[in-house]
Image (cartoon, rainbow, N blue to C red; front, side, top):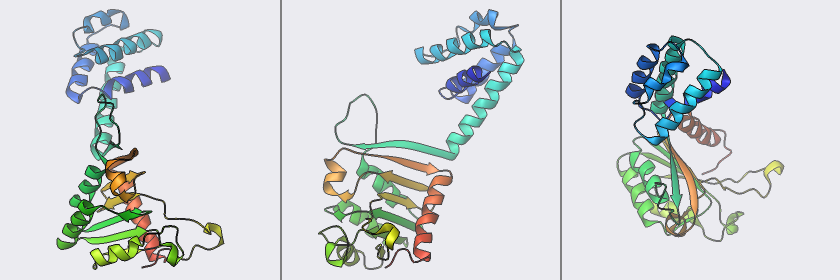
Length: 252
């Protein structure tokens, strides 16, 4: 049964709900897997054909009534597409492109999060410099009333691990933003750095990346990340960052 369930998931995850329902309706009319040849007209492409052939093969080794298989297909399709609608995950990549896989650029994804913010925005980075487009987007966010918060690594002059005082720069560029640093680390985190690179707005959209807020990270480095829209992850990330401020783990 596990193999049949996996075959169903494989098929419905790559098929629109209406097409899956048409397949389910066709299966209901069958007496069993031995009559599955009549489904040959259903696949719209080679990938769907492969998924269907796999499903039929597995069905033949674990026979269940056609009506039961049709019901499983319909239920799996509904569950998959509801979950997909609640949360969307997109690959983000900066650097050489293969030309074979479509990806979003790091700067595009980060700007999308900033420009989508309507009430609260939290960004973290190890360093921040040479990102005029990002600073302008943050200025626009502040201008429309967004509460902008940033967590950055302190400079070496202030006990941190970078030579550039990005905190002072951001405070000058965005005087109304809340700029935080990690000061009281205690023995457990002695020598630790602010190494997270995330951006999250309104508990609904977040970008988790390897990229710092630098020109090279936006344009030249090989950087990878994911853009997550909806679901619990953006909400939990935003709540966690703000809880670190509330509990005074982070200082302004």
